[in-house]
Image 1 (tube, rainbow, N blue to C red):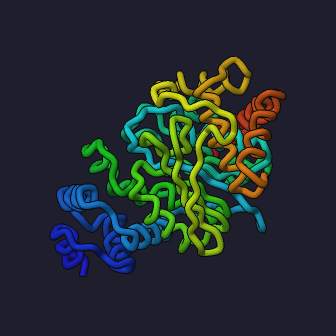
Image 2: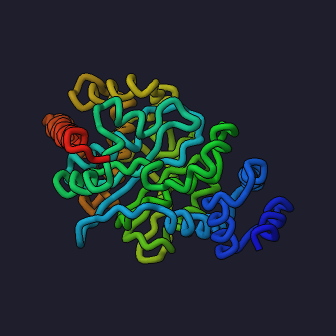
Length: 349
């Protein structure tokens, strides 16, 4: 069965969800050679991934994941970009997640170190002083206390070790860039996914509609960014109650100018962390601040904490201008660092 499915993929044929599940199960179990894995990832990249394949792949990866336990009745949010847009922007989804958290949205951020960009979410958070490698039980306690958790992908997807070497050697985006945002190892109610190609809007929305989110949003921004754009129009698909509805957004709608995409360039993790704190302290305005604000606002709105994007923008700007956002982020970092010290001195892994 495995060999038959492999042959079909290499011949360029599309798989159904159950066949895709079987293929990913075999990949995660280390049943393929490095050459076979490289061929599979290469073929999928060239021909594009079909929505039924993404669904099967995501279900298999979730089954292999180490579960993260949320408090009963908790409606948490997650936002993540696929990466692979080649723009090298500031860590927008992670910064936006922290801003939404500062406004009271419970956030479970799922991420990794950089594969193809200069700064992944884990690199960025580490530079801020957040202990990304907290043990699962400590991270669950941190979330219960603060309302924020970071699920470092290698700790929650140990089976990904089977494909780690191939991904590192390929050094290009693969289907795993798309699957990362779809495989948070807990059931979040609100999920926002940024994609690097508008062709992925519909397939990713389709997968979200079948993975059981309360409200989901898939976004692609002009001129080709995997987040809400301040450099042009953003195309979105809203997933709610199993229905998928198109939306568009332009920064002018909330009184923001349209910036050249070059103005939202980021740097290495240290530069991005410093820039984020400068935005929160009110020292930096303009393109970087506005792109963080609109992305945080979308997450706040998606999480049913505002009736409109415009209202959410006002709330996010208010949290920055009052100093509350910086205060909340600093408190989070202090609690997380204390928990890490407790692990070290207590001898926990």
